[in-house]
Length: 75
Image (tube, rainbow, N blue to C red):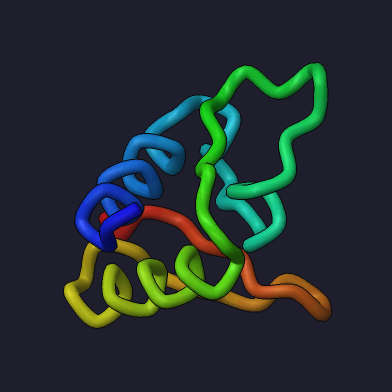
């Protein structure tokens, strides 16, 4: 999957109401039965690369919550 598609999917996922408080990296790839937001069929490495690009573009912000990074859309 190309990086543009992964980035678009990340933004779509972060726009979902379930992501209103941000998501951990694992939440993009590993969905639970009760999750209603879409997932991404890409490697963790590709998702992380796309997240870094979105952060550099000012579209996504990353913050720490205890020991894991939380990703959310920038205002």
